[in-house]
Image 1: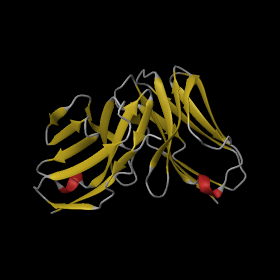
Image 2: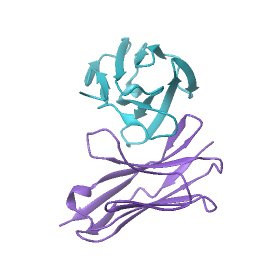
Image 3: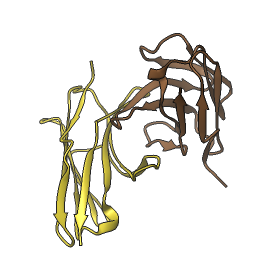
Length: 109
Length: 111
């Protein structure tokens, strides 16, 4: 059974701080890794993807992947109240996308 | 100019009824999916179709039957609805290993 694990939170950070979200996965053969943001009552929205070991930066977001440790993380710099949402980690392998349970992030003004 | 659309947005029905949810994508993607998100917000894959062919069929009751008339459409028919079917159902599409684009969801309530 392929599994994707996330700390469900809630994670609370002050405005302007760095939010760090973590995810581990069980299938060593997994190829692609994604982070989605889901606001309450809305659909998941893709914010980052990463395929290779290392860091990938996009604006205030940085995704980090370590395939040896089967670990992927998302850093959000200069967190804003509008970043308050549930963040879903997803792992893709052969047309099969598996999601973690999500981490709820609250950014306090 | 919606990329992935679903109808209806809300569905309230009695136990034992049969209902359908429709999904369409205009992104030209080859793969489409149905997900169920329960009250605990866990997003679970149900089915995946690639170019109209079923490629993933998770352990869901056979009361759920997907149909893909063409690669832009993936509909979900549910027979004999039960209370436990109440959830939000999301359609999504993707191309290759790129991320998925989700529809707005259909909130199903079974009374």
